[in-house]
Image (cartoon, rainbow, N blue to C red; front, side, top):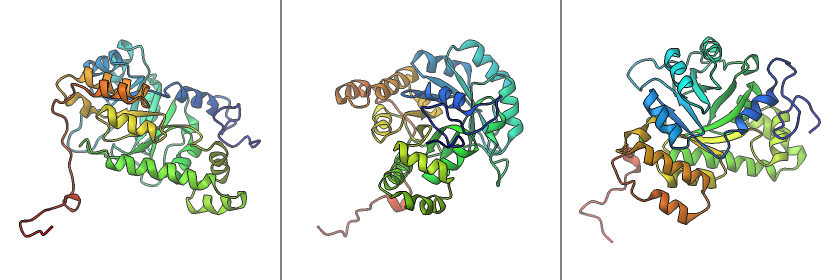
Length: 305
């Protein structure tokens, strides 16, 4: 597209004219993570395990606990950055631009404006064009993804389960929804794109570019409930560029082996033999699968067949 205000993944067009924080550089930074696994860690030991297992990046967060969840302790982020050679990401609350300012000042490579944390601003997301750091944002559908891109997100994370239960069903549902909406968009006439962009409440220029590219105009990862190599390969085969792994992967007896297996699955997601090898020997206890009552099929004594 010729419009300089559109997001273009593989050319020099930029979403913003700001010379200090060109969006094209942020998009290039996000592309460095394609084909990898980003692992959420809560301490230095976990970060070292993730790096040694082949993670392309670690995202630092506070341990899950009751009450308001906020950005992680800056001293922990500094400690992890000094110890690791891979990029470091940290979480900020939605709309909390001061937390983002703090994270940028201590040199994080990526900032995740995370809906997993408490919400700081119910009506406004951070204006990510005001920052040098590359931002990651979550979505559950195409319209939400493209709105975050307009705000300056250079990596989109399709979010699923937020409870760490190991249940991948919501992640699959949301990824399929995004991919399905893109397929619908691809089959539209040009005249229909205006109405479609209004319906999904997304900027027309970015919607038109998504149609032109046949995919999201920025790097697209999946997150939530991904705890096995098969889970990760499923996300990749559905069309994602990589995966986020939650802290529940460290609940296993050998977290290095599990993270390493998932990293290998992301790299070889179309090879069933490699996936079988990566999945072998991972039968230790993991986070339980929590099914809601209305999803459990009951077979009573009075059932007839």
